[in-house]
Image (cartoon, rainbow, N blue to C red; front, side, top):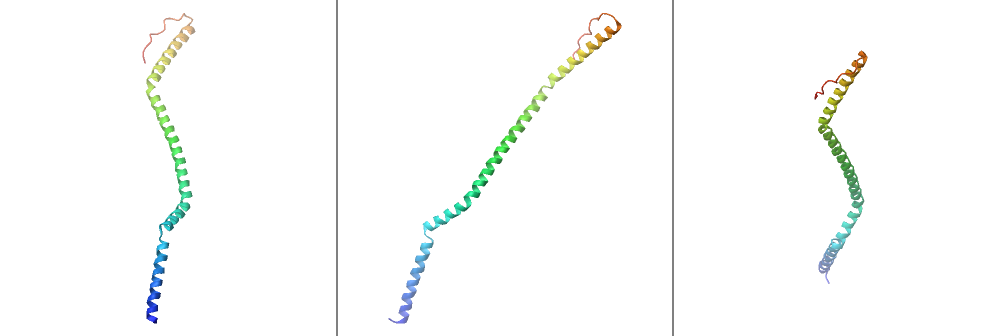
Length: 120
């Protein structure tokens, strides 16, 4: 064999070898292995982020419940202002009657009829 012929055959062998190595390096199982490595490295951090997000969601839900409960309590207080005004009017009438009775007792007279009830 001549040397140029050997060089052509050697070139063919090296080209086939290079192609085989390239195919093996890019085989699907190698790709899956690389994917598995990536998941193994990334998963703990992602799991921590998920746990943090769940904890923050629970805290947010608790805060939302507290705010809604407070808003409901304030609304109920506003709605009960009618009753507070009624109680205030009744207290004013009771104080007026008491003052009238005290004034009558101080004068030594028998208590007269209390003043008529007025709506306040």
